[in-house]
Each structure stands twice: as C-alpha cells, then as structure tokens.
Length: 294
Image (cartoon, one colour):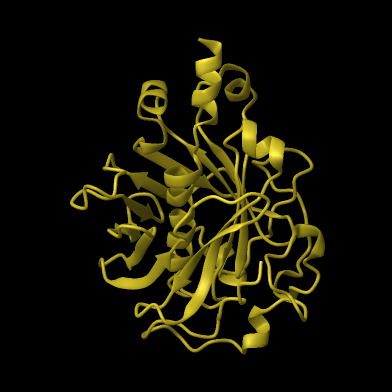
C-alpha cells in the first residue's frame, strides 16, 4: 500500500487541542496498522496484562483506565488508544451448513488485549431471508460482561438507485442513550458516510474506494474532516488470506483515529466499521454454499 499515512493532528472545530503528533504515531516508517506482536512502540498502552472475569480463559483483557470527565460508562477504554483491531469469529455451523448465524467479534487494542466483545442479536429468519441487508442489533460488552454500547441498524434500502432510504446506524452508550449516528450519503460511484454526534450534527466524513474489493491487499475507507480535505483516520478491511476470504465471511478490520478524539466519536467510528462490514463484506460465500447443498 502506497497510500500516505492519515494525518491525526487535525480535528474538526470544537474538539480539544491535540497531543503532539509523535504521540499518535508508531515507530519510524510506520505506515500500517500495528499488529499485536509488533506494538511495542505504543507506550500509551504499556500496561500490565491480566485476565478479567467474563472472557475465555487465556485471553488477556485490557486493564480499565481511570474514566475521563463526562465519559459514558464503559467508554473509558477508548480514551487511551488510537487504534483498534476487530476480528470476526469463524462460526463452524455457518461454514458447514451455509446458514447465517449471529456474528461475533473481538475488539482488541494493538497489544492484542481484548477491549470489547461484540455479539449480533438477530433472529434466524431475518438473518437468512434479508442477508447482508438485514436490520440488526449489535451488543458490545466489556470485560465484566456488561453491555456498554448498542448498535441499531433499521431495515433500509441497499441500492444507490434509491437515495431516499439509505443506510443508517444509531450508536448508544450506554444502551438507551444515543451518542452518535452513521448516515450513508448518496453517491453514484463512491461509498460515502457522515458521522454525526448525538445532536445529529455532522462531525466527520468517510469515503471508500470506487471498487470495494481487492486481492491480497487491504481496502481503506478514509475518515476525513467535513470539507474532505484532511484525512484524520481510516477504517481498513484487512486481507485475511485466500481460504478465509473464499470460504467464510469472517473479516478482520483495523480502525485508526486521533488519540484525543472524543470517546463518543471513537465509539461511532467502531459502529461505522460494523455497518461497512455488513454492507460490503458480509458476502455471498454462504449463499454459494447453500446453492451447492441444494
């Protein structure tokens, strides 16, 4: 990938002053997401690792930092990180039968410590009749098993031919209290979205590539300022290997945002990643399997 590293020293008007740019960058020459085993340069997360209740044995959880002022409960984990990695779990039943099951995701920091665990809450008929266009509720839980973020996607049109009923996602933190929205913007060629705050005021823009597919390479959705002149972060669908890409819909994503971005907007960017996954990468592998079975 020859794309320039997104700028993280610029924020939309109204956000607090930045940390020095060096605090937001990895080691010299760093241009991609840090993998868990290569994240030693991120001193901001240099904390002890230990297992918390509520997670599988042997999986480290990120220690809970002190909550910042006016931070919604459960979002304090996001205050000390500028990258997250999202790994969708492979469902054996789904691979064997081809029928869609509820998606499950691990949300980790760059050290490989689990920050959250996300579980889709959708019934069987909705999953298998509506496919990737299905409405869903995604529940994100912390290390104690407490739901801290709820993502809600209503049933909307998925075609660019109908600009009056495009995709939308509501992010609540804690559940029941909206903190932001992801709104799809109509464009004949490019995937475009707007990130809004709880008052439905525009904060950031997201722009994807014209062709949302790639072999052996990552696919980047750039997060930009409102005038779309400055790149402040990105959401990347990471190449997972030929077999995993061909036979499963389990995807890996990386999200990069400014370290001192409002934790609510970080949560909204995580929500945007899930919406992008369902819209573009919850692909037809299972449908192809069903056609073979039947």
